[in-house]
Image 1 (cartoon, protein in one colour):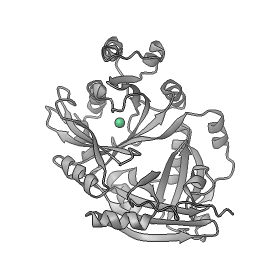
Image 2: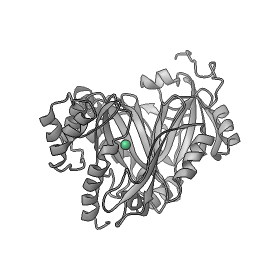
Image 3: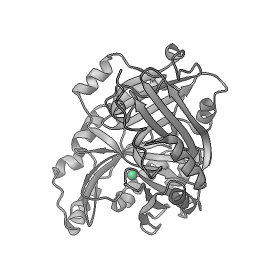
Image 4: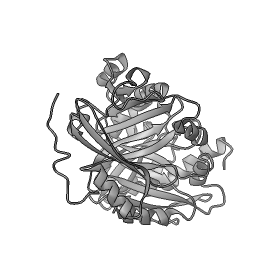
Length: 397
Ligand code: FE2
């Protein structure tokens, strides 16, 4: 047992100073199987779990099962309810599998919660602390858009951020996964995903500015970039998007709303398959080597959007005209179907998966930044045209 901790004793003057993205929790229909999907296809280790066998431990539960998936500094938790009336099962019925909680590590979860409530935030649940022989974790939740919650998490003792990053301990009630073949395979065949670059929410039409104000006021974020619907539109569909960022730019959270188009926008399609309720549209996972990561993920069977060949006829010149030369092998970029965009700070490589579940809702983006701090505005047209082909196949355009 270790007693080293800094998280409780170095409470920052600013209670909403974010230290890390603690984890992103998904509500799913079958956590055991979902864990194997993300481990197999995206190369996450199954690091810890909570199920009936751990239910008598402090923090244990008899009505939930959960698996912690880790890769680099990314932590996803897939959780299922085990009883017919469990809140998770009700949400899964309404929304399918998806993101419930974007948890943020802070110095003092109770102080962060009180500050957010004083700023006008609405409570999801009140602060509570769970302790065991390793240490303690304090958590408190506020409601953000739609069905999504932000949990403030502060950690002490064996549950400190450093220990969690080292995969020693996650939360009371979870135990470490024993050595399994899948984790050994992932160690030998890494996908190179490092951290959550940004996390995008879709909100209802007319609600984008409401939630932009909410992030400014309640979480004390700042606006990072702004695109209007003239920037992000194709012949048939459109959206509006504003990017909110925490004070230290630790997390960037673009917020989208549908805009008018001749046909249905991808944002409206998401909402219609999400009980007309706002939610997380995609998580962008950062890698230093886009070609390696996309090749590894394709080998594992990740289903990415198909980018038309014609895209590569113009993309190199578009990036060059902004003063950058793409260092990655152009033929490999094309063969792997990777998108490229540039701004005045550099370029980026990105690619989007198809939906991660049968409903056309949550997906992942795999992104590498070569100086560019934007989000692929120049690819929106190419992306939307590719997305619309998929929408058309589903009869949703
Ligand atoms: Fe993105």
